[in-house]
Image 1 (cartoon, rainbow, N blue to C red):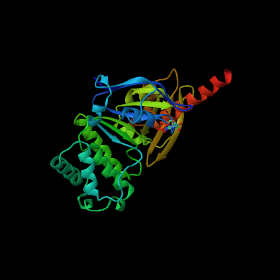
Image 2 (image 1 turned 180 degrees about the horizontal axis):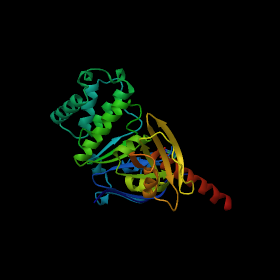
Image 3 (image 1 turned 60 degrees about the horizontal axis):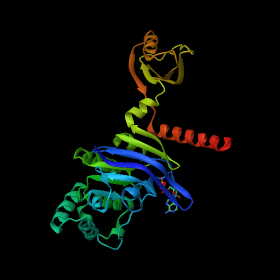
Image 4 (image 1 turned 180 degrees about the vertical axis):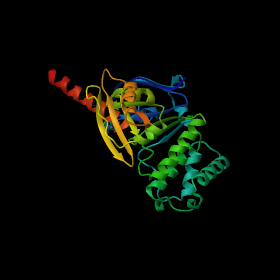
Length: 313
Ligand code: ADP
């Protein structure tokens, strides 16, 4: 079952096409990564999902029905532009925003207490928002985004400005919310987080969807038969250059390490059988491309194809 279905959505700003006939579906209960270079159209799509702006054509469905105002209370939105009232006290502001989401005073207080204790920020309650660092404000904003327990969370760059510890904290909280059944769409340039928490991704570039699917399957799809292996001997191994391309080798403390690309016609088994003659194998792993590499490769490929297309016209 899909919580969100975007069907043939197009959005134009004066003369600029921000989204060109985009369709995608987000299954319930997953973390969905919305990726793309600056200016790709991610924020425009997020603003459409939040009903801040409407598509020029196409439809968005929420739980099978056309997205409407009443769905807003089921959606939690963390915008990239942080909109906190700087002069207010942290506790007051958190209460105000929680009440805006429809919580009663008692519910709001109870849930905020839970989150403030969880994030170990109880002693901020009476501080002014402007006294908090950017990262602290972001934690506060995260809390106010999830406090009404939305079914669907939309997070635009939730890790920007966070140190590695807080990035990890938010990542863990997102996985916990997912375990509880929340569906999450996350737009971020933090590829390490994408690798860690996303089940599926969609890569958009210049208003078009250029790649979509399960993260693990995508990594498999773009794999290049590269393996990492370590032997218990420092000695170099003669590699048959027509089958193996040695990309890296190093040795230390009676060990030799290789990164090898197995070329067409060769196989991982053949490689293992070959190297076995030169020592004991301590480790052998396939190296899959990182989401970062796939992102850059696919965007560059699309852009150069577009250039060629324009030239041949
Ligand atoms: P992303 O979030 O992927 O960086 P955006 O959705 O913000 O991309 O922007 C997509 C394109 O649309 C960009 O070229 C941007 O300049 C343009 N754009 C976004 N919002 C507006 C607007 N309100 N008016 C005019 N152009 C806009």
